[in-house]
Image (cartoon, rainbow, N blue to C red; front, side, top):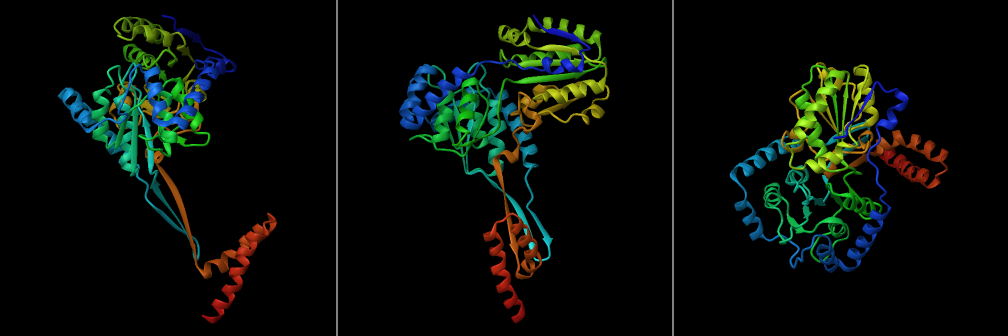
Length: 435
């Protein structure tokens, strides 16, 4: 195990300590462009070709059938189905509370402005199914899409070597109101949803995590074809802890993040050298019991423990790093959390494991990584809607507001804008006189 420890680094060195794992993505983007162009030109035929090449399976009917959905439910244990239903209920409750109430304001006499939320009509959801079939991601994306009122919800997920989709993914998709499910993975799935094929409908916005090829494909199609949820990178967690924290809790959270992938990153910030050493010993002990040990060890090679002077330094370091997940396990976690400005999701107190947010507490686990928490929110109900504004002006309202518009338009040298007011004010004088 190779977790680096840094003691009381100077603030000038913080930026270097906050670097994420970097890869050269030029080849990845070249592959993504080739597949995207092929699917755009050749539709389902290209999708099937790349399914055979990348997923090693030939698929005749790309869409999951009703019979397959019914079979999936019978394959799951009652315990798992009940767990999924409980998580579904919590996620539904939290996201339903985010519904936007229409705003109507009279900004001036006779001038009324209004805003309402309308759903994105067609959305596409991508759910990975490789080393870990993420049926929890179905909940995080499909539940808010349905609550928002999206008319068409399409989901793509890769099949196994037998041409089957993981039954937990299918059960969760059915429970969450997904209309169409397709056995398509990787770049070709993003291409199919972005451009549309004979089988897959074109959507307006694509959501969901994926490997570096999926990420590259999403970024490329977002340049002109569709919107995407957010830029994405490897998953990450930062833990802020003091001497009151439990080393075994911290180690478990540290490792749970590291097992996401070889390029994931975990960082512990603490004011206690004693805690730092105890956590390292706990990580070594718990690591031996993990089924994904080899992959997790790779992630630990670019994870770190950083000992800082006080709470303020830990808050400042965290804000500069802007973690996807931030766990605060200190005696004063409520007070310290008020100093946090940049984070995807924050987990407060010793018993609030990040796993709760990943699965069942109710918040969304699709979050900004790579420092994007400084400017992006995680997926929420607003991600699936658009806000449209309305304005209505009476003749009296224009008489009052018109001169202001005239002056501004004239000073921007936009005569047609100014004239659109003048012609109305001329007519307005006649109307007002005849009243």
